[in-house]
Structures are given as structure tokens and as C-alpha cells.
Amino acid sequence: MNRTTLSLIAGTTALAAVTGFAALSAPDAPGTDTAAEAAAQLPVERTSLLCPAPSASDLAETSYTSFTPVTKGTGSGGKAELREAAEESADAPADGEGKGKGKGKGKGKGDGKSGEDKPAKPVLTSEEPGKPVTGDSSGGDAPALVGTADGRFAPGWTVQETTEVAAGTGRGLQGVNCTAPDTDFWFPGASTDADRTDYVHLTNPDDSAAVVDLELYGKDGALKSAVGEGITVPPHSSEPVLLSTLTGERQTNLTVHVNVRSGRVGAAVQALDDKLGGDWLAASTDPSGSLVLPGIPEDATSVRLVAFTPGDADADLKVRLASPSGPITPAGHETVHVKGGMTSAVDLGDVTRGEAGSLVLTPTDRSVPVVAALRVVRGKGDKQETAFIPATRPVGTRATSADNSRKGSTLSLTAPGAAATVKVTASAGSEGGTPVSKTYTIKAGTTQDIEPQAPGGLKGTYALTVETVSGGPVYGARTLTASEGGVPAFTVQTLPDDRGTVAVPEADEDLSVLQR
Image (cartoon, rainbow, N blue to C red):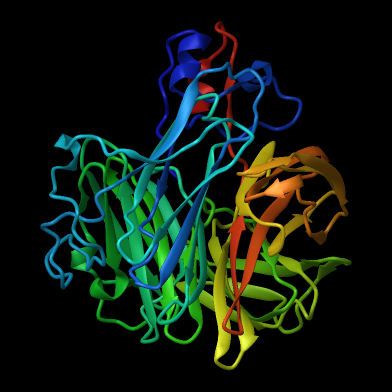
């Protein structure tokens, strides 16, 4: 995702105060002398997260879980709060007609002047780092939420939105990690097929309007869509845009590019299927020559890979499944060819064959940047449910998954290269309990499914924090499962590094290596 270069002229104290989203640029080769090598890692002091409106269904039951892991060096002050955002601007046409306006599904709480309104009261406020706090909503009127954490609550702040829909389009379990605002998002795996109702939710946390272009790419390239240009998202508000209003073409597999011209937004795609349930599709990691898509459930009955390369050059990728016993090449799907500027889809069937796994994509020859996601189906017949797994960043230093209960949570970790050791900590429960930690070794080229150990005396829900102890990069995902009228409902969230710390070079070093 795009991050504009931050010009740094102050000392380290001032730097730490403004680097809520700061991160190091790509490191140089080992052994080189750079400012980054002399940098100290300090906790970020401010973080924003945006939660999309959960559902239009009157049968929806939504829970929110907010959690910040304990981080050394953060002091004692700060807070983390979630507040309501206007769900859509009142001047957005209900039928989705008109340039820059998508078909919304909200109640029109916004008036286009949200930035002038009095601040909404918090709907969820964290009490202390290391302890989750939860909240609930019912029905189809729940709005998008805008959240900010500062001080000791900022590093690693995570919010999970989980919705159960008993019946209708998209029935089942839908989950999404609330996302940080940014200016560039890729969503391979969206659709305008007749059975699908896909919305891209755009949420603006700032005091000024954001202007967004939505670009759609199908199997033959870019789809013409004048109404996808110049979409205005008012301050402190959210716009759900129905993808089928942006184009007359029915495409089973689409890639959506959210390009922010002005300002910044949070973005997520809600993919609802008439027959296969539905879930949230989170953004793929930045385009890269190699990708990891972790956490395919062992009982997956159908797995579809959707990939896209933004450039003109074609990409040829090796396809490997990191299984519990080691890397496997799927028969008949040893490689995948992705044409430049076109969305490619490959049905891998029941590729896991009863064993949990993670998909690893690497270039066969020269590296071409690619984005990718998996559509995963569990169940059979009219008892099927869908979830999505986007390509993700490694766990890195630390990653957290909120909203876990005593049953129904599975942690999936893969080490596609060298073996690695990780520490998994189950936090205190939201209503009581004692944290517990355990160390695991993930063998090279394998995926290990872990049934996490619950906190002692657990009451309520808890968070899982994964920390890399040693070895190669580890990628992770958490799966939640539930039974909905015989349907094997589930949702999968990946575990990228929480970027809870920022590298601060010595005052006499070149500070331009930092990016915001």
C-alpha cells in the first residue's frame, strides 16, 4: 500500500509522537551499513482503525472485540475508543446512479457535513492493555465505526468485527479485522456474478473529504466504469458501493483496485453469495513476486485462487501447498500463468485432501509483482459456506487475533522457508482469566494447525498474540467456526505484523529511510 515519505527534521522524541503508521522501507542486503541498522525500535504513539458497517440483514448479530497487547516502554497514559461514523452521505442516490456515487445499503445517517457535527459518543472503550473489551449490535442498522488509540493503547491495537447472519444472502459467519486507513488497496476475488452481491466499503476517518477511484479488472482486462471515478467519501463517514452498479458486465472473478486521489480511507469488500454464504474479503498485501496465503482449513471442499498482476508483464508462478508434512505440488496445478492487467482464476478443488495447508506462490523465472486471494468453501450441497484468504505479510515481530472463545478457534502457522520458533500468548479474558503462553516450532515448508490453549479461568473472549522468537519468516491466520443450522460457518483472518513499533535512527543519521 502507498505510504508517502515523511520528512523528518525533529529529534527522536518528536518523531515518536507522529509515527502511528511509520515503518522502515525495504532493508538493504545483509552486511551493509545503513541508518536502519542503528535505529532504535520505539512504540508507536497513535493508531487509527476503521470498521465497516457489518450487515444490512435484520437477522445480523455483530460483536466487536478491541485488544491491545502489553508493550514495553509505553508509559501509563492513553486510550482506545471506537465511535460511530455516518454510514453514507445523504446525497448518495439510492439507485447508485450518478458519477462517483455507489448504491449504498445504509440508512443515510450522514448529511455530507459530518466533520461539522459534534463528536459521537464512544461505543467501545478499552480498559487496559492485555485485556479485551467487547461490544454487540443487532440488526441491519449498525453503522461503520471509526477508532483511535494513543499512548500505551496504540502499539498493536487490534479490533475484530464478527457477524452471524442466520438466513438470506450471505448467511453464515462473517469476520473482518478493522483496517488502518491508507491510499491504495487491492482486492482479487471480488465478483459481479448473478449470485453475488459485493460491496466495497470506504470509510474516511479524517476531517476533510476523501476522493477515491474504483478500478475493476476482469479476465480480459480493465472494465469500463465512469461512475467508479471520483467517489467522494465525506469526513468521518462511510460509503458502501455496490460493484454491480459500476459495470454492466457479469464477471465471476474480479480484482478491485481502490486508489485514493485525495485523503485516505479504510477499505474492505463484503462478498455475499445467494447459495454459498458470504464473508469479508480483506485487501491483499502489496504486489510482490512471491506470496503466501495461510490457513486453508483441512476440510475445505473447494479452493479457488484468484490472482492479478498490475503491470503489463505476464507472471508465471509456481504453486506449492505447505502441508503438515512438507511442501506439496498440487497435481495438475504445478504453475499458474497470470496475464498482465488481467484477472486469472484457478479452481484447485479439495487441494488440502483432509490436511490443513497454506498456499505458497513463487516466480518460475523473473519476478513480477502479483496480488492474490483464495475463496475457500466448506460443506456440501445446500450446506456450504464461503470465506476468503488474501495474501498477507509475515507475522514479523508480533501479530494479534482478537475475539476467540474456548471452542471454535484454530491458529494456523506456516514457515515456507526456514524453520521457526514462535510464542503464542492467550490473553486474559474480557470478563476474567489468566494469560497463558506456549512456544511452538514450525518445521521448514510446513503448516501447523494449533488449537490454542485457553487462558486459565477464562470468562468471555480472549486474544491470541503470536511473536516470532527465532528462525525464518512465519505467516499466520486464525479461523473461527460456528454451526448455523447445519451449515459449517467459518471466517478466516490473516495475522500480519502489527507494526506496533517504529524504527527511530540516531539523531545524526539520515532520517529519510523512514516512511509513513
